[in-house]
Length: 262
Image (tube, rainbow, N blue to C red; front, side):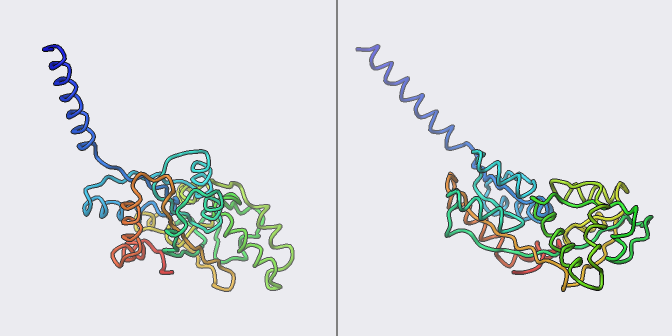
């Protein structure tokens, strides 16, 4: 009888210890985020942690790579994409809470050039000049998709001519899987010009690169959606994070990094 009481007591102690350990285990929100949002979401994540005492773990990558990871079973609570195409693919696969999906910011494409501008790139016409080294995203990454749309628009304009698109694409020396790689190559002088987001010209990079604005008639407005994943262990907290992103405080951070309101 004494042995039985001892066993019950030990079991109770172990159960209490296990419950205490579970209670002490810190919650962590996993947020899959488009690479172009690295700076802004890093800051928003810090605000969220300070307000909730919940850790935020970011996975920054190309939206197409994040989509593939989610489709292959990678765990995430929140997904923020740099275009609707990748988000819609995850939605069509039945992997997000549809009612949580919302557009939260927009972005534009810009040409970026090294500060010393060795190729003397001054306008869009210069992209078709033989020997110019261009870097852009792959067709699957949003920044690459947007760049291709812009190049096609220019090629369809008589001011640039039918051969413009062919000439520009012939000058592409590299297609990257994230916009961060595009910016890095230009900043290091490994390319003469690249297609990146306006928001990528951060204060830190302004000493290394300059931008050439693309007129609105040729530009593309990138729309950024965000949503809670269906398998999230923390749906309420995930929605809180999205609410912060959409709040005036979140918008102020995004605008500081060059993003524009929806």
